[in-house]
Image (cartoon, rainbow, N blue to C red; front, side, top):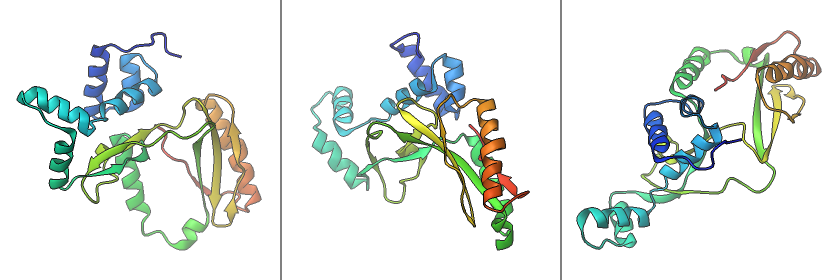
Length: 214
């Protein structure tokens, strides 16, 4: 719960500066003294450079009238098109490096290796409606570029968190998380539900891949 309703201009500038410097949402939230959800909203608003806003800014800079349609024509001429922004889990640069390294190390693993692995993760499902859509101007084949995606975090309000796992032999237990996902709660799920799922799937003593936490 935020103690202050409105963020100051200085806070918003600091958030943008830290984000451009590659800091994660949690690191930024810690520095600014705001919640992760608040930081995410600030960054989302900063990405809303729609044609009308660009037109207004350009008009002020050039001292002449520039319509939103003119901006759209220029963007299209530069091979930019209006598209719905994709939502991707926000992953810090450090964890991106770790995940890529892990993928390269395991890319040549034989099928038998993967047959003995259980994959687990948690995900958010909105209770009321969706998080909405946002349009962005981007060039072809750039839909997954961080600049054109909407960063998401796993633990937000107005939603239900669930934990699950799967293996080659099937899926494990689906666990509904009705508490704040702190370290001990996460470990409890891994130690109890994940082990139980492994036993049910006939994967006792297998190797687990636990997603790197942000």
